[in-house]
Length: 236
Image (spheres, one colour):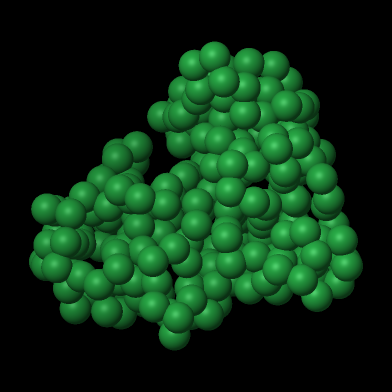
């Protein structure tokens, strides 16, 4: 059984159905990317998985447990974290306070927990007492990732990790995601508009279009597909 299995998921907002029976899976220690045009339902799928919106039909199973009807906080307690594209830090709190908020389900946050972050992102230790709003966009994204990792999740959901980053920081962001997977054994499911770079980083990928599965395969298979390139990657 896969770590995450979503089957025939139907969901949306109000009376608007956005997802029309989407399937996807994430195995242990995999990086999986969802790509597709704007309005395809990519972020909606992430929110349905994490319990931020209701799953109207279908099922979501995480680590062998049906979590279809659980709230986001209950999903977090089971070992899944979500980093949204926007508003993913507490800007008026310090770096260390943000990390403490990320570990809110833990009974105690030890210096060893912080040290694991400092070892991975030394610049955060230098700014541990600095308010998060004073950092650059790239640094804030790294802080958001670090906060999510404070509970050592089995699965990390990341929505548009490269959004708003300077071009020279985009490759670094994807490298960091690979490091996180390799060093922590955390599987990653991400939505990303920079499809080519994301697929090069990913073990597998899904293409959504109009709220439905269109293509799936390994990262290399999707990159090499003429249909995927023509329709979703801006040509071959």
